[in-house]
Image 1 (cartoon, rainbow, N blue to C red):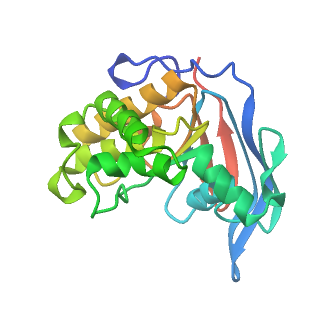
Image 2 (image 1 turned 135 degrees about the horizontal axis):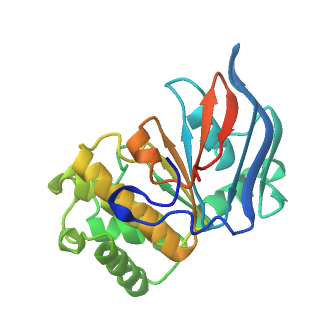
Length: 242
């Protein structure tokens, strides 16, 4: 399902020649007596889209959180561009998430008091980019995600599909090296979900970002270059179809 063409005819596999960017080896993580990861491994190359699939409770979101430096594994190692993410301080990992990583969540998690333009500009403002420049870049990304018309509206005034495109624009505005997308279409109907995935993966490929996509839907995983299945905290790597 991860072969040469995604739904709608979008080419995939363009990033597979990139160098390994983010990797995890033999990850173990438990919450109390309950194991979430049991020797999980993972790797993604620059420009590659990898779908992480599995049933609810399989450990796929825990894997994403370990890869992003949000949660520390109990044992095992995560490396980003050769640096040991698990050995970094909380401050170093936070800086990495602000500058090198982008995030798209199932429900967008936009700030309701801000306009859509201000939401997209927010990561840049937190990085101390001047307001005018931050809003210029945010306006550009809203246009690229085909939601320029909602710039002055607040999240509660736009549709679910529009709001999720705004969330994708916010994730990409800093031009991150890795985008983590956790069930990004889970709250959308199939038509809006398809459009969000097409725009997300297309924009990521244009910028050369790797995408780690957590999903349980085959139609969403079809946008990836290959799949990693998580079951009972263990990973199984599926080779792309010929």
